[in-house]
Amino acid sequence: MQLDATHATVGALQRLVPETIAGGGSFARWLPHPSMLTATARADAFASAQDSAGVECIRCLLRRAGLPEHLQVDRLIGGDRGWPTGFVGSLTHKGTVVLGVIAARSSVAMIGVDLERIDRSDLVPIECLVAPEGLPPGTDSQLGTLLALSAKEAVFKAQYPASRERLDFSDVRLAWAGNQRQGFRASVDCPVPGLEVRTSFIGKWLVCCAISPIKTA
Amino acid sequence: MVERASSSQDLGALAAQLAGDLNSWWTEEGQDWDAAVMAADPQSLPGGDDLWDDMPKVDSKAIARTSPIFMRHLGVPLDVKLIRRGGYASIEDAIADLVPKMAARAAQKLGNR
Image (cartoon, rainbow over all chains, first blue to last red; front, side, top):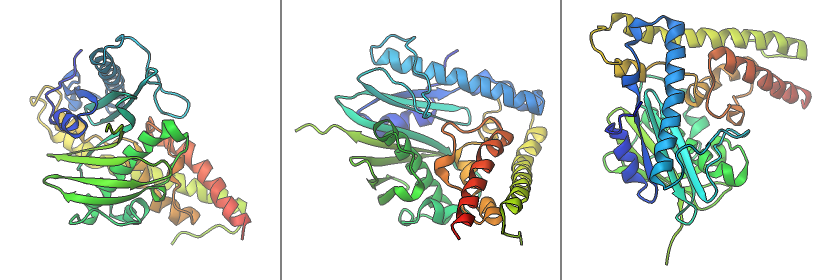
């Protein structure tokens, strides 16, 4: 089954990281209405659909990168994925949406993406845990903490293949610029240098990328 | 106020209380969503996108939000480096993974006093 690539987050991701091949979409149409299932069946149906969506997303990225579609891009012991030699990539999912990126190492040294949903979960109690260096300017505790959390998740994912080190929120310090309408960006201070963060809000969704592009003269 | 451990035996009891509180927290997290599902019109097919998108999941954001619960019971905040990449299949899976590790962390801190 095909992902619905018209989901607004796909276009947002593509605009954020034009250096990469970005794609994905929604698998909502693959699922029945949740009220048609028991609570246990809902969890099983969702998990199965999400797994299939991840496989489909990877397959499309490989095809667009000119690689064999059925290459295995499995999870490694550390939780990261084994992208084909010469390539970096990242996958994220939230709700019924899966997003992914792939890029040649000649263009991008590191990449991590994270997708979050602006929901009612209370993040204020963990503001100091997530962002001891402070929140993005002009954001309240709830939104700012979500932004910091998502950005740092993207940094964790981007740097891990290079460092093989698990990081804490306090190991990553973000210096923010921008605003919600135009998008926040951040320079990254963490054990692995060279990363920058780019973000985009689209409706109830937040897309964050941590990327280390190869700069050409 | 939850009592802090003064011995490793106490820690075992506190770990059990912590697991119970984590389960209760997760049950509360799901109640609003369950109510929204039951109240929704099944005719709003296909998928009920917004409902599925808001279904509570035991992902890294959810687990990070439990840090105050760990702090209350064990006296140490959750070490987010311990959170399994890719999230957990269920709250039971998360508890089985994180509570022993964090209890060991708290025991280490106790031993260093």
